[in-house]
Every structure is written in structure tokens, then in C-alpha cells.
Image (cartoon, rainbow, N blue to C red; front, side, top):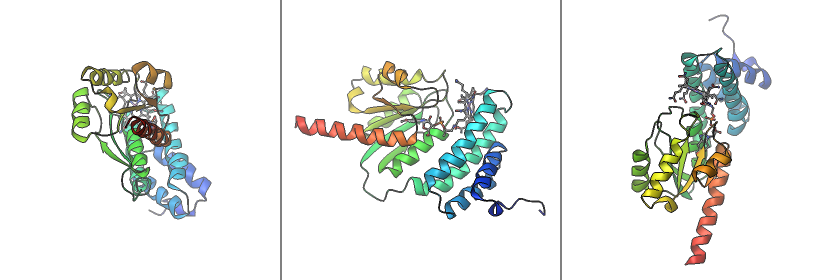
Length: 232
Ligand code: B1M
């Protein structure tokens, strides 16, 4: 089309602003292209993710909360965001070394939000962990079956709704019930979750974002392994 905007003619700041608009409008191809252009210009994957994609999604979240955007529009934004994340995936998840640990991660029962959880999965892979991503809407049975099958170091749970975050406790209580709680380091996250809640439900740590999840996982795993060595 003659009046189509050529994203390459924009400087970095204009392009990022345009990407916020395109994310808002759910324009998948434009987000894919914008993401590639920023990478070509030497931006790190983390910077593209934070400044262009996550910041854009924050604007969507505000207007969703305020009743300006509705589920169908937000779904389109989410799909556009996912297109950008797919471009970043090989970079964020490339570690090229033997896994340093393993995580089973999923969004809890009743909750279908998966963008943040997928981001955590990608960054954990990039941080050198093997990740088994169970997807969305996982009940305790599904989490426990995966833990028994894969025997990971970590269980990661994500919840984006105040109504679904209590389900994290259901899973942890089930682990306790079956005498399996101490076999895993339990990390929790998601927009409504905080440290106080994580403590209250008996998780090992709350992770504010994907980068914190990687750092926390490394620290807690090192501590656990050091304690095991000291006992041996
Ligand atoms: Co939903 N939604 N949504 N939504 N949605 C929120 C969460 C909401 C805050 C919007 C709002 O009102 N401002 C609100 C929740 C209110 C509340 O409970 N307090 C809300 C609502 C109400 C709903 C519905 C009920 C709406 C309706 O139907 N009327 C409905 C519920 C569906 C369900 O789950 N049963 C619903 C539906 C949807 C869509 C399907 C349209 C879509 C999801 C698409 C998808 O995920 N595939 C959607 C979206 C996109 C959002 C917002 C706008 C964006 C979420 C997101 O992807 N953020 C969101 C508003 C917001 O959060 N500001 C909203 C970007 C992402 C990178 O951040 O997920 O926070 P986040 O992840 C971060 C950290 O939290 C952390 O690391 C991530 C990366 O740094 N983290 C972890 C996350 N999980 C972790 C796990 C870990 C560690 C860290 O484990 C170790």
C-alpha cells in the first residue's frame, strides 16, 4: 500500500513508540518486523523485550483495566506480543551449555494468561536451565504428575488473577500432603503475587520478573547443593 509506514525510516525512539501503538492495535506482523529491526540495530534482546514489548503491554493493561480495551482487543495485543517474543526466543533461550538445573513451570488452574510465564521459561532456558513448560490452566494433579515424571529442581507457578493465585497454595499443600514438598524449590510469580503472599503459602521465593526468576533460581540451587554437600 502506498501509505504504508516503513518502520525502517523511523529512528529508535520513534520505532519503539510505533511498536507500542502497533501492540495496542494488535498488529502482529509489524511487531515481528519492529523487533527484528531493533535487533539488527544492535539492541540486546532484553532491551527490545523490556522497552518495546513489555512497556507496550503495560499500556494495554492499563486501558484493559480502565474498560477502554476489551478481551478481543487484548487477545490481539497478546498475539502480537507473542510474535515479538518468538523472534527473541532463540536469543533469550540460547545458553549452549549443559543444563545447570531443571524447572517445571505452568500457569495455575483457572488462569489462561501465559505471556509472562513463557517469558520466564525462555529466560530460564537462556540462563542454562532445562524447562518443562506445562502451559496454562494446570490443576494440582497435572503439576504433581509432571514433577514425578521429570524430577526437576524447581516448580514454577504463575498466576495473573487475584482469583487464581490462591490455587498456588493448593498445589503446595498437595506436595506437603504427599511428603514431596522438600524435594523441590517452589518459585511463584505473576502480577498480583508478592513476597508476603509467597511466604504465606509456603513457597521458597517470589520472583518479580523473569530476570529475577533466573537469578533467584541460581542462588537457591547453589545454596541447596552446598547444603547437600555439607551433609554428605
Ligand atoms: Co487478563 N487480566 N484477563 N487477559 N490481562 C490482567 C491480569 C488484569 C490485571 C487486567 C486489568 O484489569 N488491568 C486483570 C486481573 C485483575 C485481577 O485479578 N486483579 C485481568 C482480567 C480481569 C482478565 C479476565 C478476567 C477478563 C475477562 O474475561 N473479563 C480474563 C481472565 C481469563 C482467565 O485467565 N481465566 C482475562 C483474559 C485475558 C486475555 C486472554 C485477553 C489476555 C491473556 C492472553 C495470554 O496471556 N495469552 C489477557 C492479558 C494480556 C492481560 C494483561 C493486559 C497483560 C498480561 C501480560 O501478558 N503482561 C493483564 C494486565 C497486566 O498484567 N498489567 C491482564 C505482560 C507479562 C510480560 O507480564 O504476565 O506480569 P506478567 O509476567 C511477568 C511477571 O509477573 C513475572 O515475570 C513475567 C515477565 O517478567 N512472572 C513470573 C509471571 N509469571 C511468573 C512465574 C514465575 C516467576 C515470575 O515462576 C517462577
